[in-house]
Image (tube, helix red, strand yellow):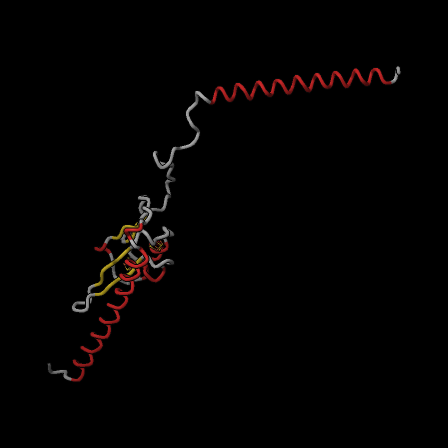
Length: 170
Ligand code: SF4
Ligand code: SF4
């Protein structure tokens, strides 16, 4: 009996200590919760408010036609096919087409462009395509038509060169 008494006293004290600690933690949580009710939210209520944008944010691609040498490297490296050039069959003039809905903002076109400033990655965020944009059909058709226009122009040019060779006097 004498052996067990101090042990039971120790256990009771330990229980009291634990109980006190538990109560303190509960009180702390309670006051933290009450305090949070009067604080501003820690998160941004996106999309109602603008979100944080890093300095090197990759947004929409901007094209400066006056600097372009029409090498089409940007079209070649673009992973999803967001850039394509069409060609006028009469004078061979090329036209740049870009889809902000297909672009993945990877910056490959900017990196590969030999003319600095011709393609710039702006900080303007892209906007999600809606059903009305019909991206798959509209862009895919424009892309296919543009490639076709180049084939037609190349064939026409070849024909003209052959005709000029056959009749150098004309
Ligand atoms: S940023 Fe990437 S996906 Fe967008 S046009 Fe340039 S290469 Fe294509
Ligand atoms: S890579 Fe640059 S210079 Fe070449 S076609 Fe594209 S935008 Fe023009």
